[in-house]
Length: 139
View 1 (cartoon, rainbow, N blue to C red):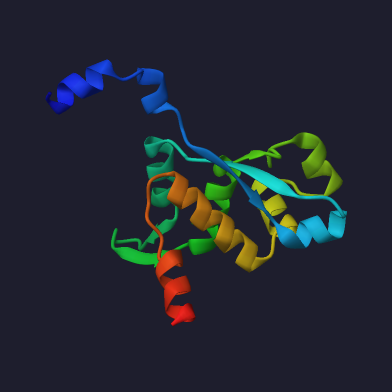
View 2 (cartoon, helix red, strand yellow):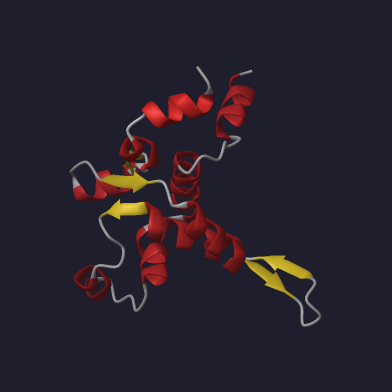
């Protein structure tokens, strides 16, 4: 059986469904005295490419200048965190944040942002060095 035959037999909805997972932010669980689980989701390929493009800074002559890591990470979190929605107007107002990007900075510490970003990357099909780093630490 060819790969085309196999693809034609699969339920197309299952194949195009974006993977999700829960991610606990332990510090916020401790603060709130209840489990603080984010519902994370993969980001569609086109949107992910847009986020990456917005994260690169070019010089006036069109050459590469810088990577805006924080911007890439926060935009990834805004799109990849499905619950709670970081675009919720009540949440934004409660924390005095004008934008979801500002809310990310108020809710999460730098390491938490990096961890959540890595989880969303993995859900979106990117392998992370997290497992390799964990293995190196064990050795």
